Length: 238
Image 1 (cartoon, rainbow, N blue to C red):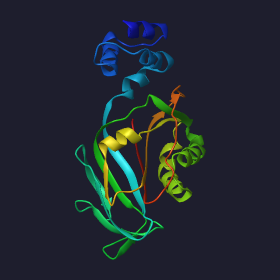
Image 2: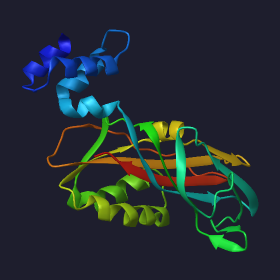
Image 3: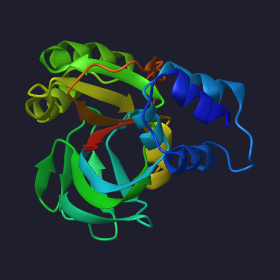
Image 4: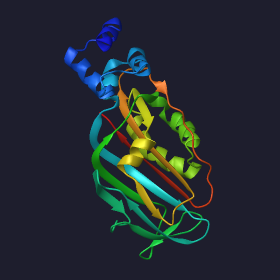
């Protein structure tokens, strides 16, 4: 009843069945916390319906960089219980085994690599309750600032931006959220020897025709110390 009243007060067109579905998704115990009601009252109801939803979609261009303190044999595996790998380079044979140098150069099977690349397909939960609504033409400037706060160095950020910018700048707006916790749950990393620092940046965006209000997301990163692993990737929601 509270959600129905909020929807009417906000002039939102939604059926009682849609509102009930939102109620069930927000709290299975039958009650909704005050902050959850505030999220509905302060945002776009259609967006709220998708914020805690499960999506079947791609994990695009995750790139894993390894920076040990000295040349080290490293084994890397990706948890794939909730997805399947669709492309890897170098070849993923129940994991990767490489020789990593402090400058990030990787060696395996007589070849050198800048990073370990993979893509996959699977079901996961993306949360858009916090993020940023960014005009397409402002995407590059936004990503430069956000990725620096999230801990990517200039080379890593440049490789991230040149992959995602062509897909995003043509949209009127993009609802952008960085999904580390959900990404960790969907695609956990297992690395031997264990790194001292892990930075995983996974961006999910949703193209929009109009600007939408969204609570801002706090961006931060751990300090790089010792053996550092960095990974970036992303996905989109239609």
